[in-house]
Amino acid sequence: MRPFSRPRCSAQATTLLEHLEFEYREEIYQRQKFLLAQDHKLSKEDMQLCSETYNWPGDMSSFLKRSEDLQNARTNHLKAVVEGKNDALGRDVERLEKMVEALAEENSLAPGNIPTVTKRVNALRDGLEKATEECEDILAQEEVLEMEGTDFEERY
Image 1: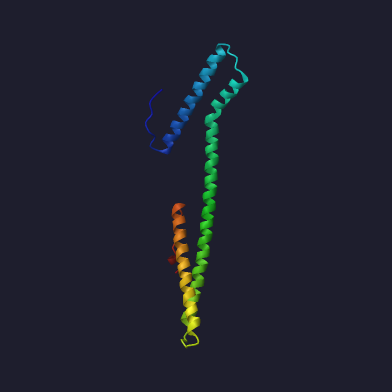
Image 2 (image 1 turned 45 degrees about the horizontal axis):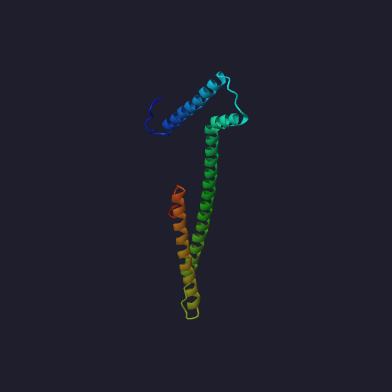
């Protein structure tokens, strides 16, 4: 058996894994061959254990593959959720832009209009605070999911 150095890339790790799996199976094969040469009769339990031992690397490989597939599916689902939130945020920003335009078109600050203008300004401020919080949340989720960041300034 030769000593192995730590693999430096995934190709080396894959080669090392394949080599170790081959040696593992070869060791099992040689031991079973020896027992059969000695006319050893394996019990049903021993045959089951030999089968499980021989198939263990493949079983683990398929388990890890299923796990990776589930993780990828979950990641894709979360990315879709973040994209949906991003679209909703875009609609909220457009709504806020329209509110600002409507407020700018309000030329009258007559005493009767002041409560209405104040309500609009407060609603606009609340909307901006919520949009800012949502934007920060989306940016954090994009960073965790390693997605490309979104920049609303590109719209103009």
